[in-house]
Length: 637
Image (cartoon, rainbow, N blue to C red):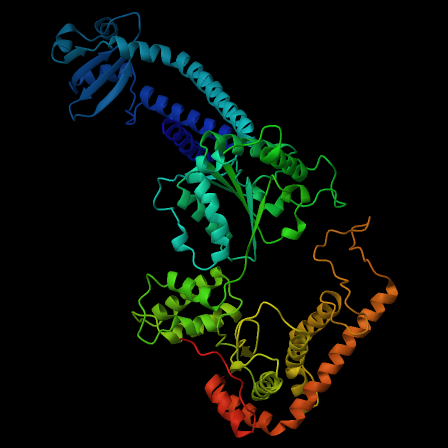
């Protein structure tokens, strides 16, 4: 405990030192000049007087005494302070060698005249005398000494910063800090990941149980998943459950412009963690320093590679750490160096997927604890409407719902607020100021209904939940399609129906208006990318067969840095032809659907122009009127 308290005090001092403003040489020099001017000003106040008196000559003083206008004279060395009958004080000077009476008698002033004047003599005190006498000599000397002291202090501070340049910048969370403590109860979903990580917690709590049986706990665990899935939150939960010190640092914080600084910071981080062992070291975004070495860029003395080499040595080298578990997070595991992922370093790879419907409901409950809701709120409906949302997206969704309610001066969050926040997170805020003409509104309506109608007719497309011509973010209108049930695998037929649905807006515009606009540009990009993935990544081409031409990682580079192709130009031509054929076949299917249901297309588009937004229930009624059976969806509990 003593060692922990001492390190914590040092850590606090270090934080305060880091927060202290850093002053350059020019700033230090200017500060020194400012202090010098302040000292001169103080000296001028000591030696000079704020109230300047009128100076008179001895002859004027003699004339005043002869005219009986002088009341008193105060002698201060050579200086005479003369008070006249009207109480005005004037200053005069006498000869230093002679007294006042001698000086005045030389001008004809008699002793009788002097007896009528109050004459007093003031002698300066010892301290004041010496200050006045030595000030002209001492002040320059003191200023020079202060200048050298101040500049040496700045140089010493700069040298200390240079020596501390290689120290670790990891953030430390004390296990006794309850405000920052997080446990598994506060992390919803990711059940499989929690089960994998609970063993780490058990080892940190009771390492003897494992060591007695000869078991070795994994030295490193790498968390892999999409952005926002809760990798950092899980790492903090492990530290909170195990009640051990937690060091957190980003991979980019190791890398500096000077070679060797990153490696030094790695050494310092592990050295500090070993002192407080058992402890957890968490490296976020480890792909910043852990990329494959020798990928055609940089040499062996590259700063990033030096940092990676030091991490490898610290995790399993000549001096392996004990009771220090390294957690790392990345959303690009395909670019990591194989030496980093081998057993003995990162033994376990925990994949954190996007939450399913049930997990999304649990995450929404966690983020709704401090929010007052109306009686109509059903979080499972929101969970159903948010497939593909990460935990961070769901947190943002709940926050946006609360903001919408507060903006309208309501005390509770309603279901309508949450539904609107889903669309706001997905597409952006409503652009109420975006004014469209009647012709543009009609084009947008037919475009969106084209998407929706094709999706409703084709058997493998997702059901439509909402159509709108209200602008949001960068889109002028949108069609919200949600899967009836969430799947981890997708088939070729689903891909083909998705491509046909994506082309629905393009075909509808061309069929109704005889022209195309810039609206379907994003749709065409998505359809083309999906068709190319079918051919190159998933092996779904009939002509080319089950061959994957695309690489997951972009690390295969030619000597000139361009991506290296592992297929010939002839194969590339066949790939382009196959992609083109998939798109053309999808266009034919889309055209057939819209021509066969032209009456439904016109009716739904006219209704959409009128109301601007069609929800699922109203849209399905229009489908039934035109003889189209709506698709079944999973009912929310």
